[in-house]
Length: 476
Ligand code: FES
Image 1 (tube, rainbow, N blue to C red):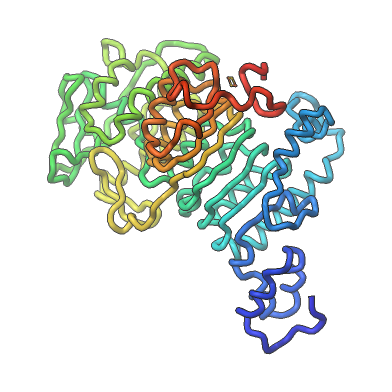
Image 2: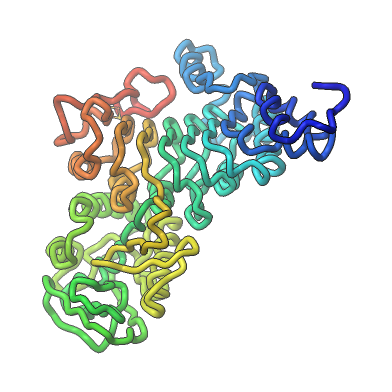
């Protein structure tokens, strides 16, 4: 770096020169003068971020593959993987000294998020935090909100959970994401996929209205201000229009929605520990049955719904009784419940105004799905090309179904869900059907899943010999 800054060089020239510098050099340059500062923080100089590598002193401008190194070391039993991968949460570690490398990762990423990304975030297209044990969900969450142009996110083998993606859609974050690698992130669950789905081209449909409107003896669905019979919003509920048919619903046009009525569903008494199991199974079935009919008319789906109700029109099981606006169920997973509640609030707003401010734009509902108006068509939304959830064993059909319903996987060319042993063959089949560009040889899933798609062409579980990622056959 020069000793005396040239006052004559324009910023554009300085930027071209600065392309040959590493991030710490850029930070030194930024302290020279205002002009140099502006050049050093040109967004184009910060298009690819590798904070975990940087914390190790590796300043090369490409991904060196730290998670591969981590797996290799763990496979050789060198202890590095175990040292970084402390899964024994029961052990009191208050006496242990924090790993200096983890601390360095955290501090470097924290500095990036606090000082650098607010200035250059719009230019960031690649963020790689593979194997970063100092990367927290909260920091990644902030980073994602500051990087709306991100196309590649690699967070393999980190401890991030679903919070990292929560609410990112509201700032249009991840709308350009094409490659997502979360392999080995054992804390990632369906909530993360639901959050990601909300960044998709179309919002996923909230299952609550399905269930609340589908049973016999319940109120019909009304849509305010619609002139076409096929256009309706099933979220608006009127106490004044009831009928008892399970398979047909009455749509009322040009009528203001009345106050949403509360439904009271009784769930069979079941212990708290059973709820999650039941919910997962039910949600899995629900998605499997509905995912292939994303754009179909409401009545076409209705025949699936009675499975969730007993003869009295009450929930057979699955959900706690819960009231929130016009939502009457409580999902065991609180973050999912919260997300759906928000969605219902949004639809309630739509019922009132006909439009809703979504991502600062106008949306309307067509055929029960949220669709973008012309204003929002420019906002393409999340459409993934490659997705790796290998070893994310908490993921179920429910989460993947949310992505599919949002149109976020319609352009998928590679999908690795090996190690996700909670998925079902039926759910995977429905997902594959929603991904026309997905070639069978680019699909990986658990060997123990029966009736999965492309049984002769798809790949088996890639985790079988992997020392870190979860696999049902390796006993983890
Ligand atoms: Fe079932 Fe790997 S998760 S074979």
